[in-house]
Amino acid sequence: MITLIASTLFVLIGSYLFRRFTNRVSPNIPYAGSDSLWDRLKVPVEYGIDPVGFLAKQREKLGDVFCVDLFLVKIVFFLGSDGNKVVLRAAEDQLSFWEGLRWLTGGLWDHSLDYLDWPDKSLKSVKLGFLKQDRIIAHGSDTVGLADEYFAKWSKQGDVPLFHSISYLVTAHLFVIMLGEDFYHKHGQELIPAMSQFERDLQHPLLRLLPGALWGWCSAGSRILKSDKRFDQLVRAEVADIYSNPDKHRGRTDYLYFTSQLNGLNYIPVYGNHVMSMIFGGHANAAMSIPWMFLHARRVPGAIELWREEVGLGHDAKKPFLDACFRETARLYTNVSMMRRTKSAVTVAGFDLAPGTMVACSPLASQRNSSVFEKPTSWKPERFLANGAYAEWFQKTEFVHFGLGQHACPGEKLARLLIFDSILKTWLEKYDVEVVGGLEEGTKGIDGVGAEAAWTEENFGTPAVRGKDVRVKITKRMPR
Image 1 (cartoon, rainbow, N blue to C red):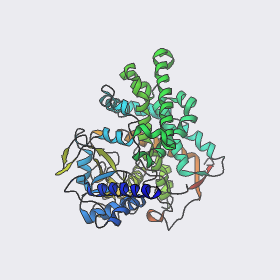
Image 2 (cartoon, rainbow, N blue to C red):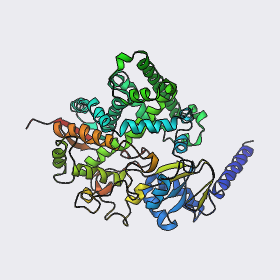
Image 3 (cartoon, rainbow, N blue to C red):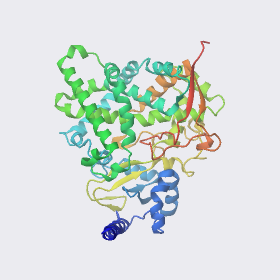
Image 4 (cartoon, helix red, strand yellow):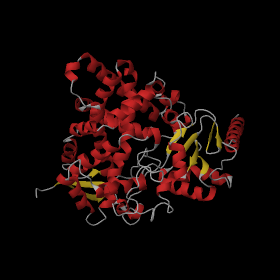
């Protein structure tokens, strides 16, 4: 009996592997690791350790277009500036942003994506809510004092984890901006940790194997479903109260109030998922850029003092060195892959793709390429200063920070306000931050910064640190 079971399993696994390795996404697209079965089996491991280096190596060998089989999903990469353009500026009916999101969330938000005309409505709401200057200023006013509250608390705790702490602070800012200060004070302690866990759980490899209907069978999926349900429940109650007690809420400037007033009660079933996705989408790039900026800048004589001068200039003033540091950090760490999914059979840049094919570009692979940037693997913010070689380079197809095309991130101005004028301003004017542990300077990371990025473990834009967090001690600055 045991022999029969073992034989059956062997045949089934063999059949799966044969089908897996012979069934191609397109007849004219080469595969990474195609030299041998062993090379093909190593692909997920090599990609997981260093996806940027892996993509660069495969591009040199295979050209700009190739397929990466990660076993749980096959991804067709279009690399280079042309690849960024092909993927990010493609029409929605050709390479779909929404279908990519549907795949990532395993159907969790399908009812929102299919609800009336909500995808189009949501894009309009986001643009109106985050592109107008008066709303940006209002969001800045909403979060005054929030960073000081957290830094003051951390200064009394001995030492704290750098990446985790800044991540929590950014999420707190996004809760206030998206849902209002009262909602944050009532529910933040419950929901912010749940959101952090949600982001980590969504990357669990088992969820790429299971259909969404079976996510509840594993711990990661069960936590995601629970968090999503709770968030939706609280947001529905908040919107209902906004309409039941209009005088109580009049004058609110948070995004939930804005979008619910703009779109009405007909869309109450989707507001929870929408706001949750906005917090999720806006978190990683802001939260992780700050620690990486700091870890690099602290090694450059005078850099932190120059930051301190610029944050004191006011929110309307230009901050050239801070902006250059922000760009350079994004160039080295942000957007290892940006995904889309085909809705039907399409031809993209001459390649035939079947329905349901995952397609990606890698802005980071271009941004680390020596044919585009001089000394591409070194942190050199001066390249983006007024007299630098790349002063005018921003949102070009060779350097994609906030996306391109119809799904480009509308939160660029808000991100700068949050990072420069709230978090860093409070940090630099009122506190000193000293690294006390967790770095291996000279041996790990870019320029020997002392830490490596968790490219595939915690990365929905800009990655967290791999392994143990960096520990920092925060002390209040004496008046000068």
